[in-house]
Length: 266
Image (cartoon, rainbow, N blue to C red; front, side, top):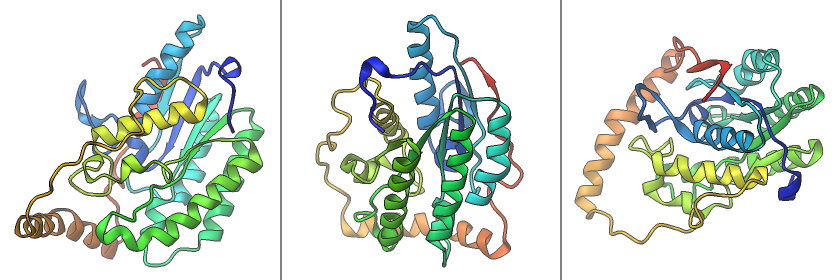
């Protein structure tokens, strides 16, 4: 949904739900080293300023927790979000489902559709997001067909329910390896900043960085031998623990609580 600037709503109660992507991994919060910042926190800061410019107070909650699958996001998280009576909900998820060996993408879309319908029925606006295109993402390139289908489904849901949507699939700048953290799954701080700019565009608000869509200047990668060493370190440090958790049926976020469980000022 595209909104002319003069008609952009002034949101006062924004609640973000989702998984590690919305929790903000791996973007350290400069004000609290024990937690992450991320694109949603950055977006909330922009929305806070937008509300202040109109003489309104703004509140923000982030219920996203790493490792959560869609069933939790559109289940307990959504129920908690609606209890806070938001006027804007960002609903971003599905990545942990898509990473599994098998996934029913049609069933996933149905869950998202029902969740969006529920939020819209409450009177709140909804901000969705597509996955990025992993065509340059090494081992994750195999996820491209799944991500493409999920992207098409998200656009369809957004159109059917009058939602805003962040188009990461079309944002080529995020395909640069420097936009991703050392785990190669979550955006870097620079990546989260670009995503926040994409969110502003989706909501019809002015972007604050005129160059956010431009690819970074080219930079030579390390030699082949160094890259192999880096791959080995990544496999040992990030891939192997992830596989082990999957085999044990546990998640890195099983014991964690949301970083911002209540609506509060920025």
